[in-house]
Length: 185
Image 1 (tube, rainbow, N blue to C red):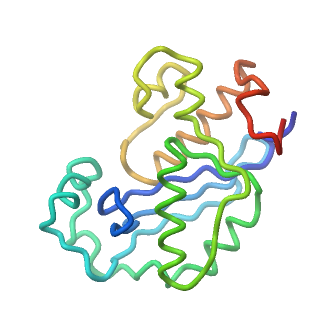
Image 2 (image 1 turned 90 degrees about the vertical axis):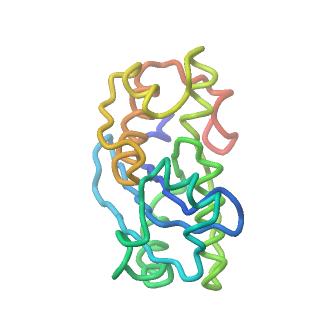
């Protein structure tokens, strides 16, 4: 099984958790043979966010990203071609709570008239649910697997830790074939 030889680890930080919310920060790291060979990291200033909305305040309580910190950053559409080029470098996308991050990213692509969907989506959160009885937050999972996570809820550091986490899980031999999508079993 060589799925772990070429994958993208990614993470988003968002203005909330619904289809009306936006990606504020995105990181994607391309791993080849266990090493990061390319990175994408950017913050975005979406138009039309209600910074006083309860859902935005709830998201800010987690990611601590303020409107002032985003001043001067481009909208998501500014980097679409660069991001799509990176996402095409691997069929496998890995995230912690990957379904949420992929949904938010797909929404942003749709807002700029582009279609994107991951070919194969792996979720370290789902792996962790099957492999450990402990809490499943990324910050809790990383120490159990010997992975360092600094600056939790920063898209770059979360994506980096997620990539290291899936590699640690794979090296342990505990990711069983039934846990993987049929396309890579």
